[in-house]
Image (tube, rainbow, N blue to C red):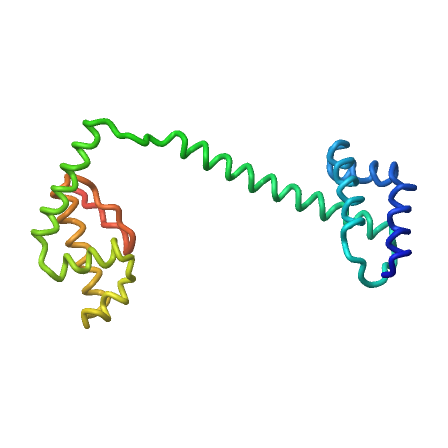
Length: 183
C-alpha cells in the first residue's frame, strides 16, 4: 500500500468514527473500550508500515480495531493472573514459627532414618524417582532390571517411609488397592 492510501485510511477513520465506534461498542460490549480501541487504531495507522492492497478499507479498519481489542484483553488477562499469583505469594509465611521449624527438622530426621533402613536398591529407586524425577523406565535401564520390578521396589520403599513417618502413601501409578471386606 502506498503512503497516500495509508493517509486515506486515516481519513476514513476520522470520517466514519461514529459508525466505527457504534459497531465496536456492540461487538465489544463497552463504549469506553470501543473509544480506546479506535484511538489505538489511529496510533497504529501512524506507526505501522503499510503493506499490500486493501480490498475493503472499512472492514480492514474494523479488523485492526478488533485485533487491538483482542490483544488488549489477553494482556489484561495475563496481568490478572500475575496479580493473583503475587497475592498468593504475599500470603505465604516467610518465617515459620519455632514450633513449625522444630517439627520440620524432626520430620527430616525421621525421613533420613527411614531411608537408611531401606536396601540400597530401594533407596536408589526412591531417590531417582522422587528427587531426580527419573521415569520408571529410565531407572529400570540404569539398574538393568524390568520396569515392573522397579514399580514393586518403589511401592515397598514408599510404604516403608510412610509407615515410619505415620503418613499415607499417595499413589502416582498403578491401580488403586482393592478394599477387603470382612465377612
